Image (cartoon, rainbow, N blue to C red; front, side, top):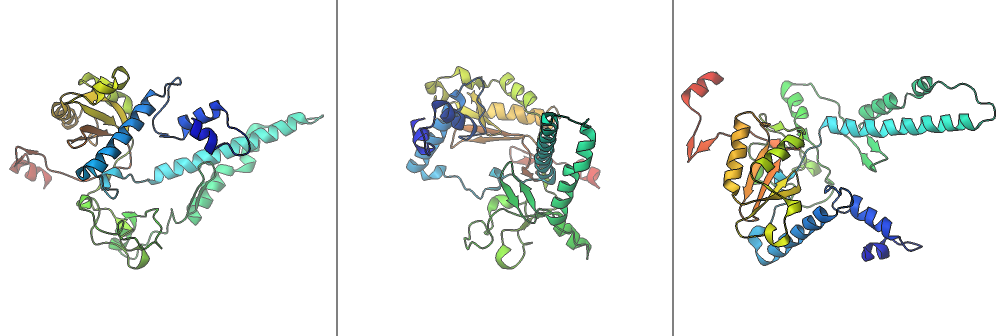
Amino acid sequence: VLYLQVTYAGAGNIKDGRSKLILRDVFVAHVPVNNGNFQPKCIYTAVMLRRMLDAILNSDTFDDKDYVGNKRLELSGQLVSLLFEDLFKTMNTYAVDRMNKNSDMARSSPLDFSQLIMQQDVITSGLERAISTGNWDIKRFKMHRKGVSQVLSRLSYMASLGYMTRITPQFEKTRKTSGPRALQPSQWGMLCPCDTPEGEACGLTKNLALMTHVTTDQEEGPLRNLCFSLGVEDLSLLSGEEIHAPGSFLVMFNGLILGKHRQPQRFANNMRTFRRSGKIGEFVSVFVNEKQHCIHIASDGGRVCRPLIIADKGRSRVKEHHMKELR
């Protein structure tokens, strides 16, 4: 808090309430603060510091920033929803200003709110302008992107298929770094290893594999309750010694620390059983990280998934009748 008071003071001294707002809304923004309880943020920060120190002492715990499993794709629906939200708030602000000006006049004339909205046509013109030019300018989030929407080439079937599976990164093409351009082993089965343009966009602009699936957001409430039913101990009821007790694994749900579990493999197998039986979403990801003593559960949107064959003790569960059903 003292650091924020000095850093963001500017001309005058920042108040304690302002610094708490920055900690609540800016610092580790994805961790919610309910009723002024900063304990989840404190624990999350402590876990981050613990992993940093562990990485300094043990290089085997390093993460790869180019790992595909840690990345999320922004789909067209998400981008259009952000644009619509910004345009809707702009329309509301304009309508409120017009109504306030009309009410402040000595002789105010009758004002029809529906006619006021129809005359402006803010949402329709804003969506048409963004889709036609490809420029996504969202003032509320300070988002300025070019080339979001492009003209689909239908010179051939392969050309149109390549356009529809194209992934455009936010990385600057003029930079000469080789890391984001190189092939990554985790891309196997998800991204095409050879279909990439020549020139400065080589390796940056990628294409999805033909059988790749990009997930959408799923409801978190039922999955959260299921985790607690399968033996996850709530984070708010644990002390620091209990969180990192020997044999305990942290349970991370969509990037948030849900709690801990004492039998990670049993918990993961139960979650996979529910998934394969259709009781939870088929694209819910469950992964046990032995090095970091953590169980990762993901149900958010934008994850890149590939088809896999289930193996039991090294033997495939795919039988001959399954292959006949596919024909």
